[in-house]
Length: 314
Image (cartoon, rainbow, N blue to C red):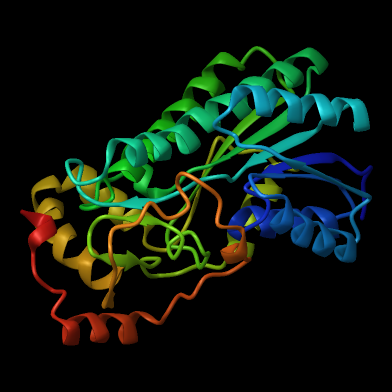
């Protein structure tokens, strides 16, 4: 470690990108604060942080969709550390299904975690940073927040909301030179979020290729603490998707349905409708990585299973 340890709070800390960020922050010698809904999975991640060399580890179970719980979390950080240098907000949930197919409580649950949760965490982080006149907030968005895809209606809406929030916060905090708001948008990432997702489409999802590791995205988030950028894309295909959506919308709309079903759904395992982890945590399934399969193998399996139809592109 080459600099003074920072106090870094990570939401979604028990799984995927958040868990990777915890370990990397710990390896850099920082004080890490782990926030997620379930204590058991958080304690497992905390053990990894201690083993990686964290200056200290604080576990705070909290649902980011509850402002009261987020407020209590920040109060606990204040009691323990007095200061806070960075917040990496990686908490998020996914639901598959068309707008009319996803039950209202599940649709609202995705918005509650992904949008309201982002607002809650940002509200308390920015208030703290403005008072001390320094700090970095990193919001983990998605390339999905720049495009639209079929059968992911709640997630698409929520990630557009996260991107809008990041931009709004950047404008609102221009007056303080050392208060930074960064937005990191990954493409497909190998995390458990797809296996834990709610689904009303008949199939589980999987990360669309090319698939990056959670460590790569976490690394991009941690770099914002040293060299803050307003916007960072992580994913080789992000630029192509964004260009197609904005510059060739007609072509994009025709192709996105069939391509999405071939590459981003698992057509080999039909499943019954389920709310997944949207309404409550599935701690036992939290982990650093998911079960991503190779592009060729996955597409071939979907073709064999007959998932190349265009129901989602109608």
